[in-house]
Structures are given as structure tokens and as C-alpha cells.
Amino acid sequence: MIIRHEVGAPGLKKVLILLFSLLPASLSLLSCGGYSAPSSGTGSGVKYRAFITNSVSAGTGFAGVYVVDAANDLRAFVSPISAGNTPGMMVLTPNRNLTLVFSGNGTEFSDNQLTVINNSAESAIGHVTLPGLTESFVVSPDGSAAYVAVPTAPVIGQSPGVIDVIGLNTGTTTAEISCPPINPNPPNPPPPPVCVTKDQGDQGFNPPYHFLSIGNTGNRVLGFSKGSSSVANLVAVITPSSVGTANPVVTFVPGFDHPVWAYFNSDDTTAYVVNCGPECGGAQASVQTLDLTTNTAGAPVPVPAATVAVVSNSTMYLAGTPMPAQACPSGTQATSCGLLTVFDLSSMTVTNTAPIIITDGYHNRMALGANGQLFIGAHTCTEIVPPVPPPTGAEVRGCLSIYNTQNVPVGSIQPGAVTIPPTTGDVTGIQPIATRDVVYVVQGQNVQGGTLYVYDTKTDAVNAVEEQKLSNLIGDFVDVKTIDF
Image 1 (cartoon, rainbow, N blue to C red):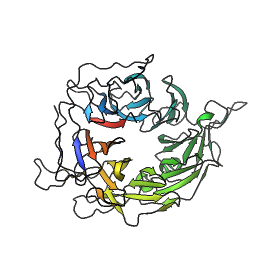
Image 2 (tube, rainbow, N blue to C red):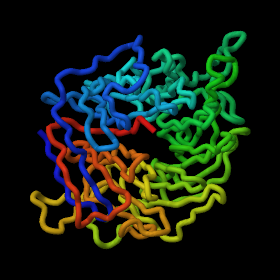
Image 3 (cartoon, helix red, strand yellow):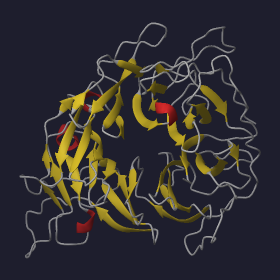
Image 4 (tube, rainbow, N blue to C red):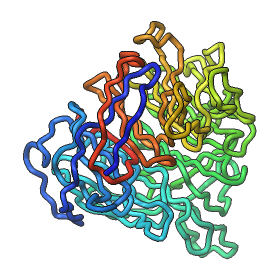
């Protein structure tokens, strides 16, 4: 039995998930197809659900996807959904009919399995074994296909790295996007081009795609790579409709600085690309436009640091750790901090006049919750962990930062203020609960095992913390998503 006990978070109220009872000994078996979802209702009977992945099987607890009543912060009394050996990252289809779950952690027990869950039935309806680990996959707007970046996938006759296209109606790999090397003796007639670099022709390399972004219409997918500057400074513009035709599938656009993510305007004519810069081995973090009608890069606008971003209306929030790192303010033992940047897309300018200091680490989770509270998660940050038992007033600090985006106080949190809750470990999941003033956060992967926390976004509960215990659960949570509107 694991019991979590946490002290109150300055600035926000935190409540641990209540009443996760001992898992039933039975498991929902994985089906490879043929499942017919019930015509109404859900398997658990819960109306407003969250899925949370548990990556560890131990004792009588099983790895799988748990169903949570997100209206009441209770676990549904159903068996976890089987989704591989170590289920972790999840992505929902836009219509919320399906949830995709990746299982794989690079160990000898990795199965590199992508499981498709029917949300209505709360049952796995199929799985695809990928050719390697993935840390990024996206779904087409119509929910028919998933694009999965597999940077280590072996490719005969060329460097590793592919994008697998998964047909979600069939649960099979329908295409594999890679770039063939230059053939000095091409057949006659030559095969249709697959990868073309703007103004440079076929370069004969295969970039190891790590991150993907997809447009609003699904007619463009952008691929980003790590590694050497020549590869990592390109954006791969992928045209899904060209797969299997004589038209170029991928066009590489140079002129970027280790891009990691992109936001698309409403008609997908422009992408706003986030360049990681020094944190990823480059020169300067920035925001940069990409004209998708001409595949032309615009001028980069420097920002202090950027590895993750979210957009609200025309405002983009970017988080990262500068190189060298930002000095921390007084009041913390941490000597290295990160920065949040507020960026106006309409004018392409930075709008915050003073530094907004957050935790350091590699930021890769961010979400805007109710009451204008922006939750920012990182991994490998500077941890402040006191001895046990902790002395009175001891600092506790992990990888979560919370920023008040409002121009009025929220509770006792002032406009533009940042709260660092006294919780430790990497942040691996953030999910605002749309029907309530709370946000679910999964934190603690590198400390005590992933814990699900519930944050109240409207009050400062420093002196009135409601605590409950997460008990009778053996496991390690990773990601969390709400399934219902």
C-alpha cells in the first residue's frame, strides 16, 4: 500500500485523488478488432471521465489505463484497460471517440506498442507494434489516421527514422514516411520523388523525426528532428494527401534553429514555429513564421528560451531554460531557474517587460486552466527535497510552476505572479477539468513515483489545505486526459 502525504501548496489548493481502492485481480484483455461499442453509456457508467496511465504492475496492481470520475475525483470501480507493459503518453482523437496510448520505456521489457482504446466501451480494440520508441504522435482532424514519429526505426539502406501512418479504422500501419538516399544509378524511368528540399533537390538523407505538429485541416504535418545542425535546423513539411502518389510527400525548409513545435493559423497558410535554440544545441530561441503556401521561412523573433508553448487567442506562452540559466530570486535554495515568455502573434513581439521566473529543467508540458492559471511542467529540474521528517518551514520544490495570466488577483495570487507548489519530481501530465475550477497534474516520476494531484485554480489554500490519501494503490502514474466534454 502506498500513502501519499503532501503539505499545502502556496497559492493553490491541492487535493489528492480520493479512494483509489485495491485493483481487481481481473484485467480487460486486449482485443485486436471486431469490438462493437455499446449504443449508449460507458462501461463504468461514469458521465465525466478522465483516463490516467499507470506504468507499473506490482503486487495485485496492474499496469493499464484507469478510469477516474473527474466530477468527483474518484476512481471508477472497473478494471484498468490493458494497454501494454508500461502505458504512458496518451492522445485523444479530435472527436474524442478514441484514445491512443503508447507503451515503451527503452528497457528490455519495452513493447513499443500503440494501443487504440474505444472510449465509449472503455476497451482496447487493437494495437500496433511500432519499430521503436516514440515521444510524439498526432491525429488527423477527422480522426482517421495517426502520425507517429519513430526516430530510431531502422530503414534498409539509409539512416534510421520514419513517420508511421496508422489507419485508426483498421488499426494497421498504412504507410511509412522516410527519405530514400540518392541513387547514383537511378532506374529508367526514375521513381517518384519522396523528399524534396526547397531549392536544393533530393538531399539523400533521412532525418530522425522526434516531434510532430498537425494543422487544423490536416493537410500539413510538420516534422522536427534533434541532432546535428544540418538536420535539426530543417522543418519537414509533410503533405498527407501525397502519400502513395507521384507527388512529393515531404519538403524540407531550411532556416530554422532546432525547431520543436508549431502553431497553425485558422486556414493553415501560416505556421508559427518555436525554435528551441541553445537548450537543444542551437544558437537562439525564437518564434518564426513558416509560409505554407510557398514553404518559406520568415525572420526569427528572439525569445529568452522555448521548448514548449500554448496559444490563447493571439497570445503565445513559451517556457524554457536559458543557456546560461536564469538566476533564481531570493527565497529558494535553487540557483538555476527558467523563464516564461508572453508573445503576441499578431505583432510578433514579446509583451512581458520583466522576466517571469519559473522552475528550470526541460519544459514539455503546459496547459491553461480555469481562472487564467497557466500550469507549466518540466523534467530534470532542480529539486529541493528536505530530510525526513522535514524541519519546520523547510523548502520543497519540484518541476511545476503556475502563472496567473489574469490582470486581477486570483485568490491571493497577484496578477503575473508565479507559484511553485511544494511537490517534487518530473511533471508528466497536465489536464484542466473543463467542467470545474480544477486541474489534474501528474508529478513525481523521478522521486516517489507518479502521483495524481488536484489543484483548485480559484483559491489560495495555504492555511486551509484539504488533504486526502491516495491509498491501496501500487503503481506509477504517467499521463492524464479527460475523455468527455
